[in-house]
Amino acid sequence: AFFSLNAVATHNLTAEERKKPFVPWRRFLMRGAQFMMPPLLMCFGFMSIRKRGVQAEKKDAPLLVVAPHSNPLDWAPVEFFAWASVVSDKSNLKIPVIGTALRSLQCILVDRFDPNSKKMTVGAIKDRVAAVQAGEDWPPLMIFPGGCTTRNDSLITFKPGAFIPGAPVQPVALNFTPDGFDASWVADGPSLPVIMLLCMAQCWGTIDITFLPVHVPTEEEKASPMKFADAVRAEIAAVLRVPMTEHATEDMILQAAARKRGLPASVGTVEYSYLKR
Image (tube, rainbow, N blue to C red; front, side):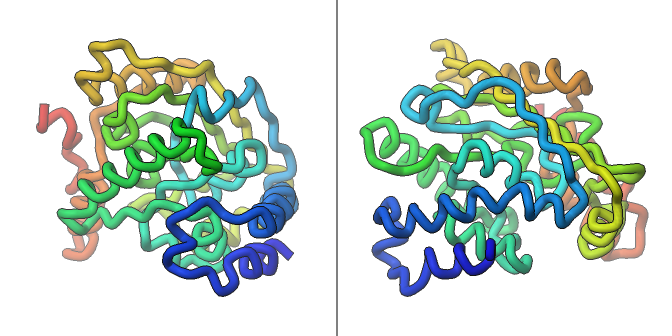
């Protein structure tokens, strides 16, 4: 049913229509898909979804900054409560069911291996934020600012893309607690199919999602997106009670390169943000 609603909602959608908010009948179908999120997560063994805090109005916070990002299911509980568009790596479109859902959410696609992708993504985020603030009927935009999947026991450096527009953001703390195993999709962990099978085999997984108060940037944070990003990261880390590290997406790319050469993934772990600073 979830797949069917997403597929029908995007049926015969033209390139021009993709650049505009969905018309009412498409939104109606997407709302139906929204209420399929809990059953979808239950299929993967997550029987309890606990929400804390209140989502702000999109005019007050057009961006939802969510962390940590540990596996491809992270977007689902946020979508159930918030129903937002997503900034996602284009490779996720290849994942069955999830890829169809991302297309229906009118997501902004990122290619971390394309040197021009960063500039285009920042431009797309700015345009979407401006459209929401102008009163256009777009949903809020959900961003995982770490830029890659990591373990959920720490927060890596946030990329500045979500913070460059200087708009208010609502931090969202996400905590997946599987039943007896680590569901993080990382370079030195199980493959994605194995993680999904482990999830489906578990008895009782739990998801906690916390909507924090809106963070309105100071003039200093508007002038320095990295200071803005670090301040928001500290707020989420405090709620989750996890440390912050200097690792970044570039560490993941180096880890993948090391594994291709038959080396341990740890060889590529250099805490890139620390070296950059």
